[in-house]
Image (cartoon, rainbow, N blue to C red; front, side, top):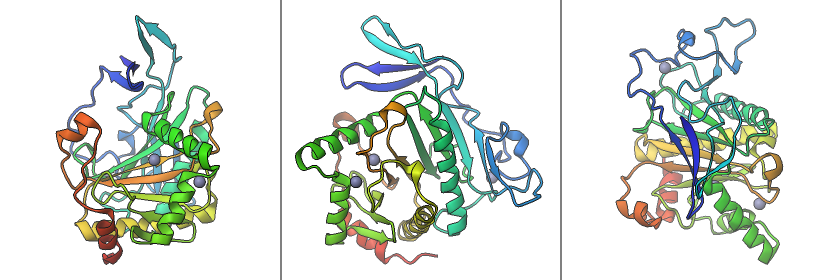
Length: 320
Ligand SMILES: [Zn+2]
Ligand SMILES: [Zn+2]
Ligand SMILES: [Zn+2]
């Protein structure tokens, strides 16, 4: 059973599933080259010309333990006073490199560009499905939650707009109504002018610790030019983003001794919910502190690492 149920008070969709992924995979890594048979057939792969099945540089495969299932109708319905629909969506894994131990901070710009290109290809493909309203990329590096340390990311196409994106859209729309400007564009101008929270600026992107960072060393990477849609990134921009991320992750690795982190790409919803006022961006949260129950209880964040301090430490970190 996989169902999307809407919490009626704050109107947050929650996926309720009776299928639980197994705690421990078998000893060998299903993502290493030579173990291709341990994953479902590829959706997308990059191989050198004439490369054999195990000579790949990157693969995209369906997740064996998906949040959502791909087949079926949404079947939106009322259950008593509640709203519910089937848990339909896509859940794919990008196996970013054939090497078991890798890090974005030490991968080449070319390798990282390939990963971003794969995200873009899957964004463009998945949005054609009229059942989906949002495509999300999420990546966890060495966090407690992941079963396999081999570098990979999740691409999830959902039939709903997640709460966090919905909140950002409300913020963007509200600001636009008053000022007829994009709040993200204004934040970028401010951060570049003030400079104390900037970690790395490249030709097209700025990485900075946000003014009201919720988490220690929280980072946002935002395109300088207003653009709602990650999937429409140009090739030079994609390469510049790879360069930017490589430096930012390299500094994070050096400054905090390779912390676990989570990274997410926030882009406009798709189909009829496409929002040209959206300003796509990446949010990154190092997992360096256990959160208190207070945040869970209230949605109110307490951060003991001022973003100005975090940005300075990251700017001064020496990459490998
Ligand atoms: Zn591996
Ligand atoms: Zn903007
Ligand atoms: Zn965001």
